[in-house]
Image (cartoon, rainbow, N blue to C red; front, side, top):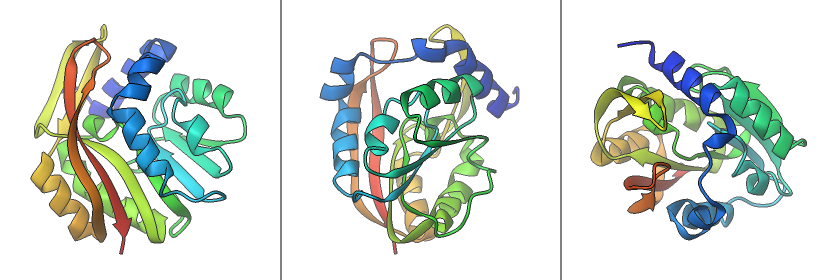
Length: 207
């Protein structure tokens, strides 16, 4: 298999701002519901870290009244996010390896990103997220339901890597890392190609 990180980086660099669901789909789908659940738990003036910020769709809401840091592996996506949120801090890098300060954030948010992480790196990344959060901080993320690793050649016209460990392993891995689960729910959502996809949506609080 090709380097998964390079496949993801190249794919999103090529997609650019074309990878954007309609505002109606976002507002009425799981993403809009979950973002509302997350924002209700993130106080104003909080320090927020978004892993895989993409072109900055959710960064606009997350940064409103808060100190926002966005991380993404794609140079193109980061450039788009900076345009949308000029007040934010943006870091280009691989979230599974990037060096961030411990106990620095009140919330970590990551939507539709863990599906692009190799399955072997999910559990270690949960532990990294715990270290970045302050005690009682929240981790708000979506996770894939299908275990295993694969590259899909024609995803939105580009090759794309997908990885996951499934619901049970995800929930147990988060608990083992030091989280308590406040919300864990499977919901369907329109996917970017016009079909339907299911994800696990989790809000977990650092113990």
